[in-house]
Image 1 (tube, rainbow, N blue to C red):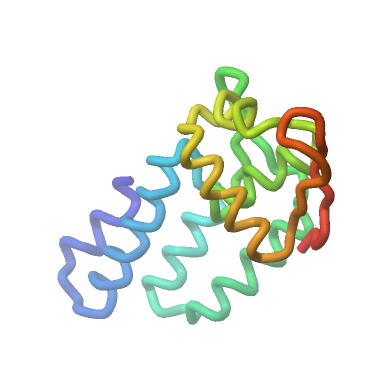
Image 2: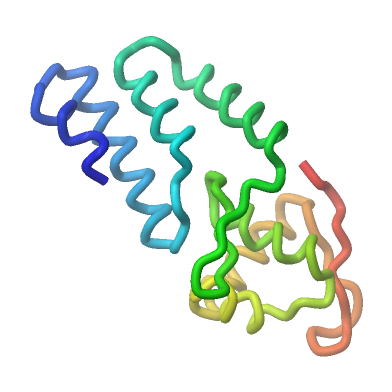
Length: 146
C-alpha cells in the first residue's frame, strides 16, 4: 500500500485526493484477500498523474482482463483473481464448479459465510447467476458471463 504514499506527501490537491481514493480501493481489495495486479497499480498511478481519466482507467482494466482471462494467483489453496471485486472471485469459482456450495466458497476464499451469501445475492441480483434446485443438491446456472 506504499505505492501511493509519495503522492499523498506531495500534497497537490488533485493528486493527493486521487491517491487517497486509490489507496482506499486497493486496501479494500487486500482486506478481502485479493492481490492487486501490477497492471492495476501502474494504471492507478497514470490516473493520479493525470495522464488518463477514470473512464480510461476502466476501459484499460476491462480490456486487460478480457485479454488475460486466466490471470489467477493461488496462495494457501485460495484462488485469488487479480480483478477488481470479490464478486468476480466468487463468480470465477462458480464458473469453475457449478455445484460449489457457499460454504466451500467461503473456505476457499477465507471469507465468512455471510460475506459469501451477500456476494452471491449481488451476483443473482445483477443477473449473472441463478440457483437451480436446492442449496444442497442443486447447481449454479451462469446467466450472464460479462
